[in-house]
Length: 151
Image (cartoon, one colour):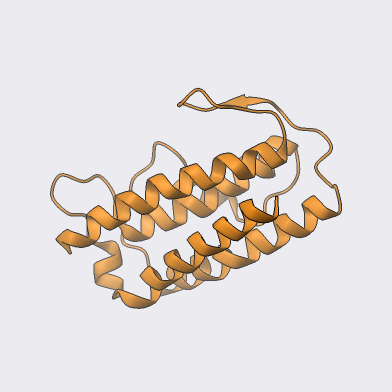
């Protein structure tokens, strides 16, 4: 798991640089031909990690239900994110991963609802969820690299 968390932390550092390196207007821009923006992708990454690890384990997530509703799979930006939204997402980038790492070490993930992803990967444990999460974050980071060319 150490390597999984190392890759995830590297990913989160990259995402943090997006939040710090682009204006609020740029973060909210949806380029022509796209259905979402930079901030939605980062919020989505945070939400999916929490849902994969905590929700499927039957444990409370660190994020609010409101955040889940804004950034879960199948959603798109309905309104511009505020600076407060950006700040919240920024804080969750690392808080959620640090807490997940601590919770895995404490072995709090006892029950897990098996889940098969859209790509056919079956997640059977919280550890599997974190491994799949690396793939998921990379997909969205790639999308963000594409979006940034148009803002």
